[in-house]
Length: 139
Length: 275
Image (cartoon, rainbow over all chains, first blue to last red; front, side, top):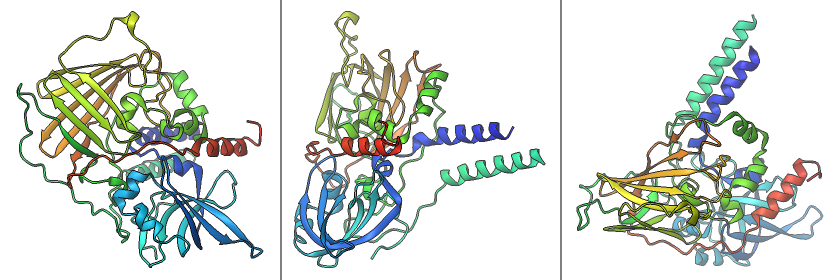
């Protein structure tokens, strides 16, 4: 009996599921492993299906490591205001990025939802794995 | 006691579904470049072409704002639809796939493959440009710079023996009153309808476009697939709005796809290195 109720719940939820958007990044990155990451922005790769930012961060032993951040597409970034010019203006400067770690265990690989640029302004980067768009003011 | 636990479980389940369906709008994150969610006014009656049919031409954003909804606080459109009537074997196959396998096998965007018909509408959060003229429907799709051109003069499909599997399929169009109907067969099985919904070579898609007012375009589709479904299924009407800022499509080519390798690594981790 209990299992039939669970099956009913599963069916109801499945029926509701198609209305939800299909975001691959939610499967690729871990919503429970997110952090604000600080470092020097070293490269902007403005490409599709995802743009990438690269950052030099300090490892646990003080050594410099490269971190990779996956963003939304160039279309979304342009329309949202994070144009190449806006991001490039922070190259070789310290920035802060909200990132969620890759679920496949690759070190220093994140999906990024926000960046605080060198001039202090905040831009949305699109990959909102933990669902914080619309829930709080970040930075 | 057992019955009471069951009833409580059922109530919790239904309440959680109800809450999920009613997610209230949340406060907005104030970041430069964000979009305020203001629905476009309906506008006047739709323009018409020389032959009197409704002119569907325009740059259309998914959702009600006439802007890129990926940056809006408005959640993705939640629409009521009947459950998809999968045959048991198809439901079992979908159930047996992990989220990662679905992304690798069925998400055209992960593979940088064409999402096909109706995936170009259902698995595509980007902008569309439509140009209609008497007898022709031209559809420019920003996502990966794709396009389709459909004759809308009511001509039949190619003879069966001349059809070949195509990502977008063999498409013909006709007007039913003010609704444009696009009928598609011979669709490549590598395209999926949406999410984990795969299809057979016998898939038949009937799309309907209508423009109830200047600023609004609506799209619906019916899926007939007797090898996968127990009966035909029709989607809800989904809303698209005319670009509020007279925007153009932007260039969007898939040139640096790292997702396939990333998901393969994830699949390996999840299967304990067995795949």
